[in-house]
Length: 263
Image 1 (cartoon, helix red, strand yellow):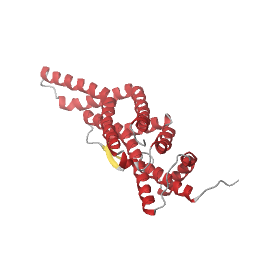
Image 2 (tube, one colour):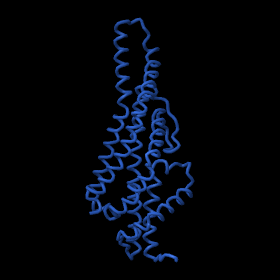
Image 3 (cartoon, helix red, strand yellow):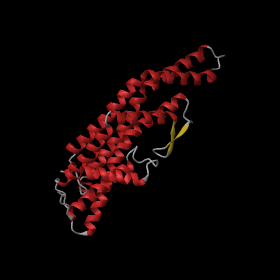
């Protein structure tokens, strides 16, 4: 039996497709230029098709005017961009932490090309970003992103809430940017603290033995110490990565429930 699919259903499906497509266009891992545009469009189509039966019963209002419908499409795309940007902020915390690492290790000038973001980032930032991507996939982050980032967003708020609840949305964005630096400092603290002790020790040695050329031996010691601490702390860092990613999805759920968006 062929399911009924009216014109209103097709219009609603386009709204779902535009939100999902805009989200994947911005979100890390999916926005990489290594992914062909047609593959991204096809992936967005199948995701929209998979969640459409749940969205169909959400009571979406489909305007009859073309102008109103066009504005609704633009609003859905903006919501997708905002949710994808929230995921970008999560992974930006790991890149910022890696930049802290590189500066303290003396590798601040070492830049590598990030194929996902299409920019030059510090060496340690790329390393931590790759680790974060693996952790994201290991803890079923993709599934959580599809549930929290896509399906729940449709259940929580609609395009008109971009205007009605703009103050709450701006507050969410500002809070998320603050959490970015908070998470980056938490991740970077083990190596930053250790290298601070190394710097203090080098300063004391410079006072005790001025004839020592600490400039020549200081950088290798700092780099070696940082790598040793990184190896020792890696299990704890991976656990911290998982907590940060899980906490970000929990925060996204709280935004849907308590921020007043969609009410």
